[in-house]
Length: 77
Length: 159
Image (cartoon, rainbow over all chains, first blue to last red):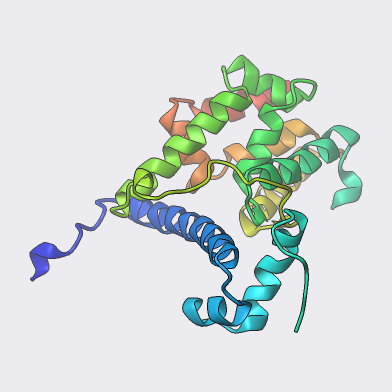
């Protein structure tokens, strides 16, 4: 089954740069995903569970940004 | 450290914050300092970049290319994802990340080694160019900028 694994980048520099770029991409996907979930009526609790983090963590990371964007009100319950 | 920064350098640091915010980055990274320098032709460091053909647009393009290539090294194509191109509204205030702090530390170190009291935009540029690995040197290599030669020119400018 090893032939189904993605090939390792030849240089350590490429492999490490890939990690950095993938983290940047994951951050962007998280921002977009949270926005879409909220627009679809998900609660912070549901979003937190889907991301595998606490509600406090997801709220702290996104609530202020989204309130500034006018996408949500900062409401804590 | 910050009290040795001249007004020009403070403008660059503030510019990096604005670049990070405009790109929706939660952190200020080394590349945002590079973008801020390239976007500021009034600074001596910015003029050195311009002389190299590196204005804000060119640096942005070089960073995007680096991002694509690095994602590809991880087996991912950016086109596979449906992402909004730019944040729709002001983001959270970005905080300084390690990569940007290291650039400023190297700028201070370069100034101290030369006996320069003030940290200018040229010292910041030297701090950026002395990074051997990471996003900035990879992006510069991608547009065939010789960062060693550019750093030498920057040092010569300082006298």
